Structure formats: C-alpha cells, structure tokens
Length: 111
Image 1 (cartoon, rainbow, N blue to C red):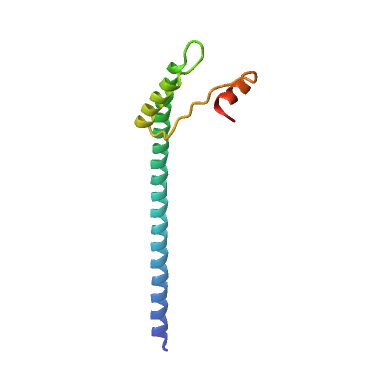
Image 2: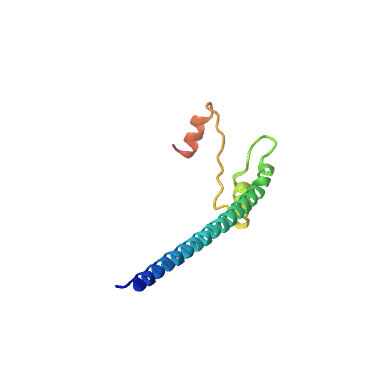
C-alpha cells in the first residue's frame, strides 16, 4: 500500500470520526432540548392540576355546620361534583372521634 493510499485512508477515517462526533453532539443537544421541553410541560400540568384540585375542595368548609358536623349525604353529593369537575379521583370523609366516643363509634360501624 502506497503513501497516497495511506493518506486517503487516513483522511477518510478522520472525516468519518469528525462526522460521527458532530452527529453525536447534535443528537445529544436535541435530546437535552426535548427533555427540557417535556420537563416544562410536566411542570405546567402539575401546576394546573394542583390549582384545579385546590379550587375544587375550596368550598368544603361550607359543608360544616355551626356545630362542627358534616352531613354525609351532602358530602357525598359535593364529592361527586368535585370529582366530576376536577382531576381528583376520590375524596374521603373521615369523622373525627374523641377517645371517649371511640367505643360507641366502633360499635356503630364495626371495627
């Protein structure tokens, strides 16, 4: 193999390595840009979901009577509407029971 052929092979190898490096760098930059765009879109989606969830449950305080009780039927109606109009998948009604009333509460509902 003569010096001209070695030079040609060297030039082709260097050109191939250079092209590969440029392509790799461009693909890496494109991937980084797509990741940043996706992260920004996810951030906006989470923020919108959070805002909708807070707005959806903001009216829950109106269900509490002056005595501090919540009518279960009213809560179920409210919960269905909130779930239909918001990204929330469920709401739970958890009554607060004092230690003194716990035995009676468990007897009513079962353990």
